[in-house]
Structure formats: structure tokens, C-alpha cells
Length: 441
Ligand SMILES: Cc1cc2nc3c(=O)[nH]c(=O)nc-3n(C[C@H](O)[C@H](O)[C@H](O)COP(=O)(O)OP(=O)(O)OC[C@H]3O[C@@H](n4cnc5c(N)ncnc54)[C@H](O)[C@@H]3O)c2cc1C
Image (tube, rainbow, N blue to C red):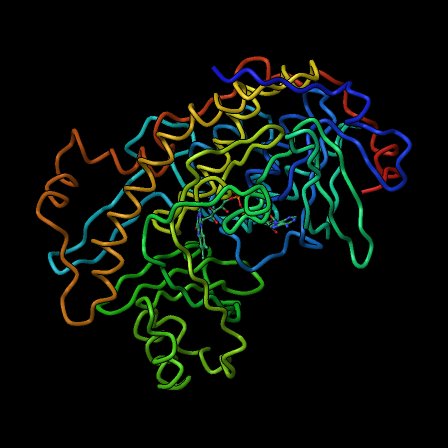
């Protein structure tokens, strides 16, 4: 049993008089789904918590806009479901893929017993703003935008916080516990010497905007299209379309060599609905090449540090499950850690309990993503063969007893995390709005 314990009240840990040094109990690096959700859950328990987010705002292109039934249930439990639905959004109930053997329903949430049988498609910036503005109602919560973490504070063999920059100014935050929620290629994990193990070959996607037109309908909010040789995904961000165009690994140079017109034609084949606006793609600078490789940490923690979300296990876009997984890590971390944080004493045993409760579920989902990447994504991108699913997969989608498995896995994950009862009710009163207005961010 790992019992090393460190406490909040050691004088050397929190030097009150050091200029520019801020103190908190939990410092979360990264205000993505994992960090923002954990920040809110801890803030509700009266725990001093600071989130450091590198971006100046949440309007970031490389964000996933899907909120799955499992997360909708958590939002319901937090009393935020109605506010969430007030944002402009669309709902995706099922995923049907055209294969050489006819259409195959990969999943249909309407077959599950759940109050919210759909993926809600809403710009992730709105979702993160909702979580953090709710957290800001607690006086013990702090969010610093534009805060780029570049160094760890290490003392006596434990991580005691981080150093970050806003513009040219350096700052230090000291904390009883630091959370690495800074996503794939986590800087915090790298600085701590936690190296990920790679699981798949990279999935390469061209990511770009296309203009929104007044005639575009709401039902089209999110779509995934397979055509021989192509796989395209798009989200309605209402002011523009966010598009991801998958390309076979290692073909980007060849694609650039063939020129923009050839690319525009390929995109039009994959998604004819956009053919009328592809002339807006005039320069390669309008397209970002994203390379996503599934990976995981063997160990998610060190004294004073815990990694969650993509920082602990990078999820690829396959099945659009990464946000769900990241938020479930946050829920388990809050279940396990809120009382030790309130008491000012966290042990390695607490941190290893978070990994123990989440690791198997994330590994199973990552292996499912790997298998799907091989069978579906690679299959779709191979122009030489029509997209065919292996017989056992086709049989599985037809058998009533098995056909709901993908919906459960995608919608809720394996062993879905639930908030323990002590997290359901805030333990501190919220601050009146006028006081929040004067509080620095
Ligand atoms: C192209 C693409 C499409 C995807 N599509 C989907 C999808 O449709 N649905 C889905 O569920 N999942 C999707 N995923 C996966 C999903 O995006 C991730 O699994 C999920 O975002 C993980 O959440 P997170 O909070 O752990 O990390 P992130 O969402 O990556 O958040 C990390 C945050 O940390 C911040 N940060 C990074 N470095 C620092 C630093 N040094 N200092 C301070 N802050 C820092 C970042 O700015 C970011 O806000 C997709 C992934 C990719 C790459």
C-alpha cells in the first residue's frame, strides 16, 4: 500500500510572504472538459481551487462539440441541464454508416433506457463557459485564462504547484495537489517525467472552417460521412462549420503536391452539400493538420500530482468518446479526493485509487477505438476496396442482445462514473453576483 502523505499545513510548503506566489489547495492545469468539470465539483465542496488555462478564451478550433448521454445525466444531477439546453444545439440520436452491404446502424441511443437518448451537439466553448461560470459562483474558485504552465514546483520529492506565464509575466501557484488536465501531449506530465505509451498509429485529419449559410438546417448539426476513400466529420458552430477531413496516415505531402483544387474535389465527393462553398478554401494556411495518436500513461500520479483526461489516456476522435471519458475521470477524482482535500491531507493511496477506478474502463475504450480505427476508418480511407465490415461485427449489430453494446459504450462508457452523494449538494453557499463581479479572474 502506498501511504506517503503530504499535508497543507507544512510551513515550507506554503511560504505566505513570497511575492507573486499564490496559494490554493488544488491547482488544475487545463480548462478543457476534464479540468473544468473537476474544478466545478471541487468548488462546490468549498475547496480552494485554481484552474490555469493556456488559451485566452474557450473559442478554440480543436475542441470536440459532443456531449453524450452519460454527461447529460451528470449535468442533470448538477442542476445545469436546462441552462445547457438553452444554448443553440442539435441532437444526434443514432449513427448509420453506408457500407458495401447496405446501411448499418452503429448505435441508436433511443434503444437505451435513459432520459437523454442523444448526443447533444453544442459548441464546446459554451459548455466550458457554463461549467466555469457556475464554478465562479463559489468564492474559493479561481480561473486564470491565458496562463501557460511551463514549470513544476518540486520540493522534498513532491510536486507542490506550478509556474506559469501570462504574457511576459511569470507567476507561481503552490498547491497541495496539482492536476494535469492539459490534454494530449501534456506538458505537465512531460515535466514530471510521466511518458505515455503509444497504442495506435496516428490518425491524421485536416481541420478547417467553411461558411455557414442561412439555408443550412439544424438537423445537420453533426455529421459523419463515409464514402469510398473518404471520411469526413462536421459540426455546426452556427457562425461557421467546423470540418474534419480524414486522410490516410503519411499522405499529407502527396496531397499538398496534388494542389488545393484536387483537395476541394475530394471534399466535395465526401460531402456534396459543401460543394457550393469550397471556393472559400484558397490557401493551405486555412487548414490545420492534426495528428492524433492513442496513448496512455502506465502511472497516472506522483506525490502531489495526478493526471486525468487525455493527459492520462489520449483518446482519438473515433466514436467521439474522449470528452465523456475525460469527464468521468473528473467525477471519480472528485469522489475520491474531495474529502482528503478538505482535510488538507492527500496520500498516494488516494491518487492510485483514482487510477484504479478509471484505468480499465479507459483501456477497454482505447482498444475499441484501435479496433474501429483499423476496421472502419482505415477501411473507409482505402479507395481500392468498398467499405465492408467483418461478418462478426455485422452479426453483432443485428443481434438484439448485442446491438445495444456500442450505444452503451459510446453513450456512457464502461462502468459509468456517478457522483457520490456528498458531491450532489454544494457544501458552501454561492456568492452574490455583485461580489463575483469585483473578484479578479
Ligand atoms: C480532431 C479531434 C476531434 C475530436 N473529436 C471528438 C468528438 O467529437 N467527441 C469527443 O468526445 N472527443 C473528441 N476528441 C477527443 C477529445 O477532444 C478529447 O478526448 C478531450 O478533449 C479530452 O479532454 P481533456 O479535458 O482531457 O483535454 P483537452 O480538451 O485537450 O483540454 C486540455 C486543456 O489544457 C489546456 N492546456 C494545454 N497545455 C497547457 C499549459 N501548458 N498550461 C495551461 N493550460 C494548458 C488546453 O488549452 C486545453 O484547454 C477529438 C480529438 C481530436 C484531436
